[in-house]
Image 1 (cartoon, rainbow, N blue to C red):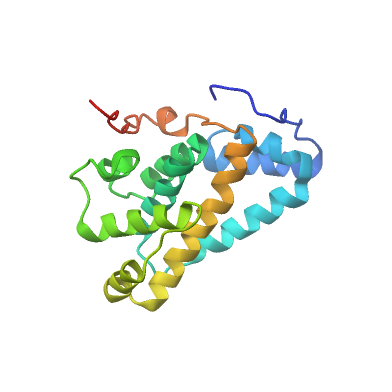
Image 2 (tube, rainbow, N blue to C red):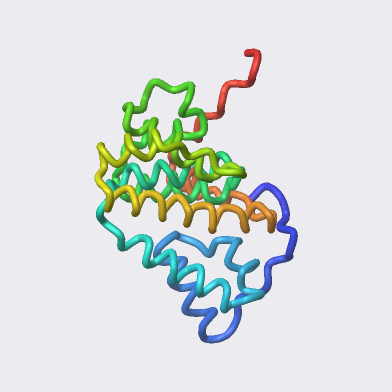
Length: 194
């Protein structure tokens, strides 16, 4: 983590804290710094984790499309923690890592299929305020994915906004998950005027 959080991390203590730390170490290799921040309100932390657990069980929409959409939201919102963690998760799920690392510069990259580009544009359109989703975007994705998968993709993008925005607001930054497992750094968008 490169900066400091806006709310200092609390010490994770007690029986529940020991269980959470053990689970994090087993699944992630270490305890994420974000857990200490969210530990200040364990009800919120556990509620967000419960929703995340339910989201991970959805299986109608292609896993790679959902992962890329979540990363697109994280890149747009500026959540380095979420972008890094989802890149790490894409690796663990054996997704296309060349594409995953290109998410921050997807518009400039030639790595993505037309459908993937539509999904990434849809994720961004849902994320901006006011959302800029169009009838044409939804109609095209309905034709290609079907209604059930589109509903799931839309909910995953909404969940990505639910998790990325608090991290940015609280100053939670990357824990270096991707670097710790030897992944190439995420691509950076080309600067305007380069």
